[in-house]
Length: 91
Image (cartoon, rainbow, N blue to C red):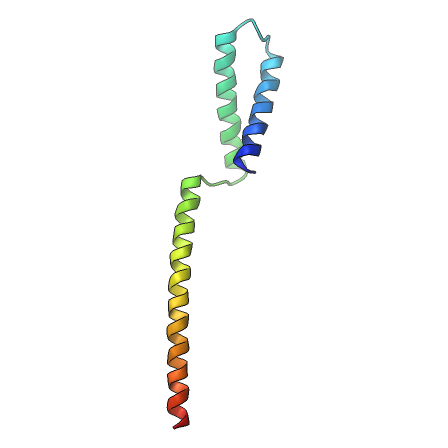
């Protein structure tokens, strides 16, 4: 779920909870409940869906790019060695 969709979903859930609780009666308490509810729902959804943080994703992506570069280097070296071996076998 994208951050925009997740934020929209949590906003809708929070708004529904605000409407369920008497909207004007406990504005300070209602805001605290709303904030806590949004945090709890967000944490639960993140844990339930096995999502990772953006920082973890970026770190894993960097490792993947580095690994891909190394693989390409090794493939190029292997191709060069195979070509050299083929030339040596032909002579």
